[in-house]
Image (cartoon, rainbow, N blue to C red; front, side, top):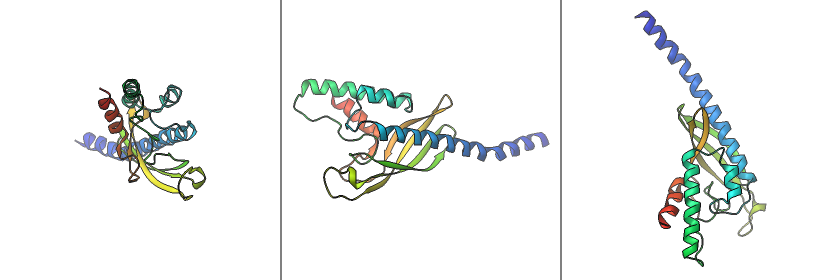
Length: 182
């Protein structure tokens, strides 16, 4: 009985350290992904093949597959609807269609298998092509999963609340494109 109690106490004592390490590692993966987004060309919509290649490493297998399926669906849609706008426009990886110009890493919370990392993001006034020259600031959440010991971005939870921006989850937007072109 004493040995069981000792093992239980030992496990409970090490749990916070494991949770903190997972938070830290997930945060580093989230920051790396955000940095990648900032340097990609701002074309909007589903990323072009070159951008998808750069995005592939930090994304989960599930999100990569959804993006590839949505890209194929968009091609099929455009073949039938030559003069229609794309099914998905604007920056995919943030609430604001124009996308961010900077980010600040927030807290990550979750388990050893899944983490939610808050990203405080902004768009500088100088980057605004249209509209008033004022900064935009908001928070989006990156949802990460641990795939074979490596943290990968599995979804984006758009939390900006913009009336003309992205809302819900990135995976929902991609699924809508796939359904619309079926």
